[in-house]
Amino acid sequence: MNRRRGYTIIEVVMVLVLIAIMSALALPKISFLRYTQDASGRSVQRSLIAAQQVSISKNTNVLFVVDYAASRMRIVQDTNANGAADAAETWSSQRLPEGSKFSIPGTTVDGATAYYATGPGISTTASGPTITFYPNGSASGDAFLYVGVASGRTDALRAIEFAGSTGRTRLWRYLSGAWRRDSL
Image (spheres, rainbow, N blue to C red):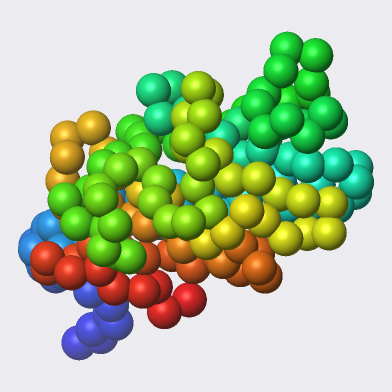
């Protein structure tokens, strides 16, 4: 008697059922919120770098304004160097990714009074917390910007550290009750 090689339909179905069960158990362990909030933090980092590049290329002061009410960042070419966004000045804005917003954390990375943005490089203007970039590429000083979600989940908090003298940015995550610097 000749036997065919291969699998029966029952064996194939059993393997597929086992794969489905294993996937169902593993899927809740994956935090998609972590990835979306990391993307929001990276978006803020890219906008800071863009503001610095505009200040150098246009040889003018540039204001990076945190518009926390609208969940967006504004880059304003401060051509008259008065530290304010005037109607005649060129500006662009970028919204945070869907579901993200600027947040006030319970505790800050730098130990400052909790606000949307903290640090010596932040000036408070009528438009919102502002970092000023100068034509030589430097900025008004160091700062931290905070991004979260509307639900207020603390594991979704991200801090973007900005070094005013070098323009270097770093991402921080709030995990298990403490701020931890991103390893990337």
